[in-house]
Amino acid sequence: MDAQAYEAVIGLEVHAQLLTQSKAFCGCPTTFGNAPNTNVCPVCLGMPGTLPVLNRNLVEFILRMGMATNSTITGSSIFARKNYFYPDLPKGYQISQYEEPMCSNGSIEIEAEDGSRKNIGITRIHMEEDAGKLIHDAGSGTLVDLNRCGVPLIEIVSEPDIRSPREAYLYLWKIRQLVTYLEICDGNMEEGSLRCDANVSVRKKGVSEFGTKTEVKNMNSLRNVERALEFEINRQIALLADGKEVEQETLLWDADANTTHSMRSKEEAHDYRYFPDPDLVPVCVDEGWKNTVRAQLPELPSHRRSRYLESLGLPRYDADVLTAEKEIADYFESATAALSHLNGKQRNENAKVVSNWVMTEVLRVVGEKRISIRNFAIQPSRLAGMISLIQSGMISGTIAKQVFEEMLTDSDEAKAIVGKKGWVQVSDTSAIEQAVVEVLSANQSQVETFLSGNEKVFGWFVGETMKKLRGKGNPKLVNEILREKLNAKHIS
Image (cartoon, rainbow, N blue to C red; front, side, top):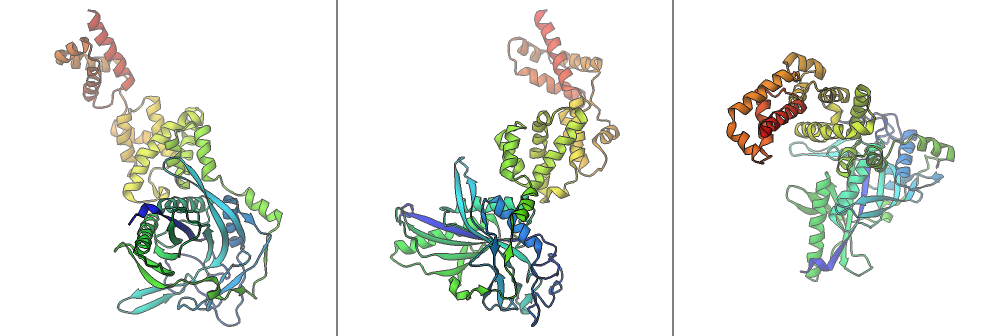
């Protein structure tokens, strides 16, 4: 089997659960984790005689996403009924959009690891409501929780422009980044706030016609999307190489077994018998409404990244790490602003030192504890206060790391912790000079090595002197006095 002779054709359908306080067409809360079947009412339960009322925030959230992806936003769109039977769909249909979606013809740019850029087209972004949830319990059978019924979603449907599992990963990562920056979805794939279905087919390279596609569901992480696509692409290539045909079907991804299982034959649009919902009027969005939403858009990640590079002078790596998530970028900017307030320097002068602390120590702790930076114990202003102590000479960089660890469990400001622990840096030149003299006197052979031209020994002397001063010596003064004493020996 020559896998290199084939190429994949992939399109993703991404559902983002919106951060509205109430459901799409009723006033029920959207709170995750409440007791089963408590976030429900006659409307979302599909009781006879009830009428849906559109949530205005649903429209404003989809407008944000449409604008962020440079989509065409229609002035008037309609809702449709998507008809199918499933135990967690009490109405027997799902309110969605079909012929006239709110947004179309957009795109998202991805950047590969080699720096190359590619636009992935977006066919449509439309509004719809979610279905409920089935819970398969071996002891109780299948249980139905309808809390999620009617929760507002947007569905983002890509063009079949994706050619590899890695491109799919990068595209989905960019979608997640956008919805969190726009504050319309929390992007949590494990809780189902962001869900992805993949349509995938393979064809011989150079062939323009599409192959038979399958749809892969149940992928609850970015990595699982990549793994599932790798498996499915290889499975289809193996079938074609053996002279067999790929069947059009819907597959479930089993992450534990690293394989897919058939769920059902793949549906087409006509299977759902779409027709306009008679209970909902068209959604009309005029220029005034668009302009209001556009004015409220936050700074998008690509713009923020460019600003970090151009205005703050950060290296590309720093800018990529800091802007990956909105909350990390917000933390960094707050800490930088606080440090500038303390030392009077411009933000671009403080940006790199703050970036170093955020990327190394802050994100290390966040990763180890598996927490959001929102729940990180050291607020941006406290981090800035600690950095200012280094800049003022009160503490050394080595002591600062100890202060940082203390601040994780002690709510006091860095200066107070330094005072309590007796960690104030030694800047008394007489004390440092005494330590230097003692180190040089006790290590005559190393002194001779240095005087013979081995400059590397100087660092060893610095370390020994700092040990004498219990790590609290002012590094600049230690270096200056050591250099002065050694040069004097050289001259003599």
